[in-house]
Length: 251
Image 1 (cartoon, rainbow, N blue to C red):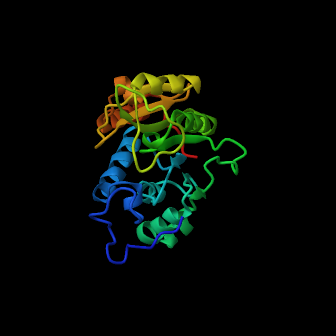
Image 2: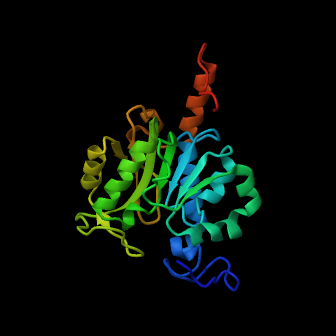
C-alpha cells in the first residue's frame, strides 16, 4: 500500500486520526505514539527482557516499539512481522535510521504466514500490541498458533485485546475499527493452542494486557498478574547471591 507522505509538513502526525495515511497515524493515535512505545518496553523489561533475548514484534508497523527494542537487543535478536512494507520503510527513515539497522541487523518479514521461517525462531518474548483488537477469532487463533510454534519452551506472548461482555462474531482483519471479546473467550482460544493465559495488571490507555505462556515460562515474574520492576531486580539479585546459582548466561 502506498500513501502520500505527510511527514514533511507534519512529521509527528499530531491531529491526524488512527488509520490516516501517515506512518505514525496509521498504527494508532499519533499523540500517544511515544506512550505506547514506553508502555511496551517497560512491560517487557519488567518481565525480564534482557539484551540477549530474542523478540518477535507481531504487526511491528512503523517501529513504534521497534525503535526502542532494536537498539536495546543484541545484533540479530529482533524479528518484526508487518504486511505493510511502507510502514517499516518509513519507520526506518524517520525513527531508527539506516545505520542502526545495519549495526543491529533486525529481521523483517512481510508475510503474515511467516513461511520463510521453516524452523522455530526460539523466541523468548513475542509482542502483539493492538493486533487482537482488530482480529476475528480466526486470526487470533492463527497468531496464537504461530507464536506457540516460534516461542521457546520458557517463552511468552504478550498481547492486548478490548474487553467486553459480548464477543465479536466476524472473521478476518478489521481495521481501523476495534473488536471486543470476553476474557473467557480469549482464555479458551489460548487453551486450544496449548498456551497458559492470564490477564496482567498493566495499564493500557484503551485495552487489556494478557500473557500467553509456554509450559516452562517463569510465572513468578507476574504472580497473580502483578508486575513490578522492583520484584524483578530483587529476584535477579537473589539469584546472583545464592551459592552455586547464577543468572542465565547470555547467548
